[in-house]
Length: 193
Image (tube, one colour):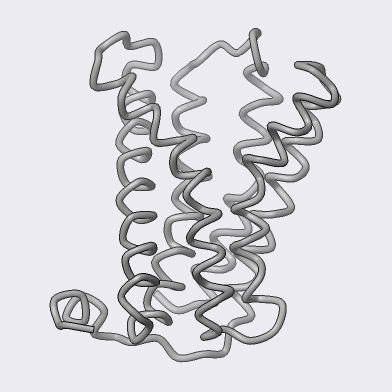
């Protein structure tokens, strides 16, 4: 898949968290459904594909940057397993289900580290370098919105708007990226840095 397809797909996926929160309620009103799991899966798939594309650009980066990408990808994959499970059984009380659910906030929190690694690696030029960091700031910004507005519709709409804009920018940064990626990404994972 090339950057145009990944970026376009990611832009299409970016509003699905907001759609889910608007349709299924937010905060204490949240009522998980199979549709919630599907929307979450769509949203996170666009995100995961962007991270995979950016990882390919950074395969020649230092070991710390590559490690940040690998951790981010693992966290997103674990959260995607939860998404699939929640499509099948959205109100599961199984210990593994609840554990996998933790990788949603963990993925969001760790995205700050990944975004910072991308900025510091300087392998991407222009505004595209900062889009992943904007995504990484979504979680702390959302927490600040909840502190400022409590668990109100204002906080919810702010969180939804920020999410849609940030992940759209991430998709657009991939779409407009003109750098070539390493086609041997899997081989480069096994070779020493």
